[in-house]
Amino acid sequence: MDIIRIIIAILLPPLGVFLQVGLGGAFWLNILLTILGYIPGIIHAVWVIAKR
Image 1: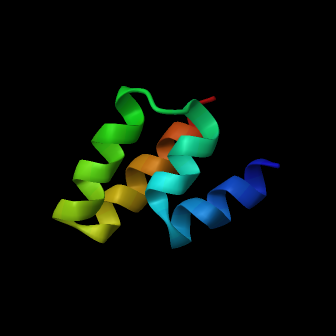
Image 2: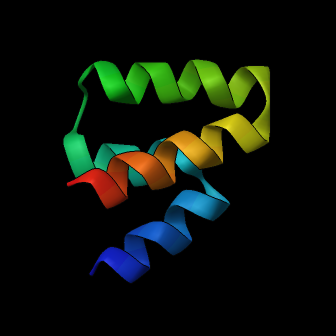
Image 3: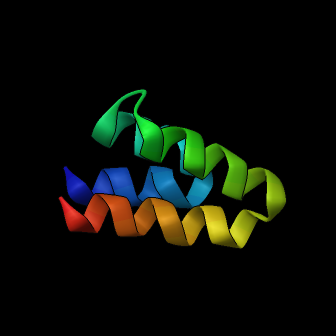
């Protein structure tokens, strides 16, 4: 299941984080990072998924 979440995180980083943690602070941080730059959003999303 983590492989699918990582693939989703690469395509749509906020969705990958949402599937992992819900509407918490990490989700909103990821939206901000994705708006500021797509690559930081991907890095954060993969980090959140791998951490849990």
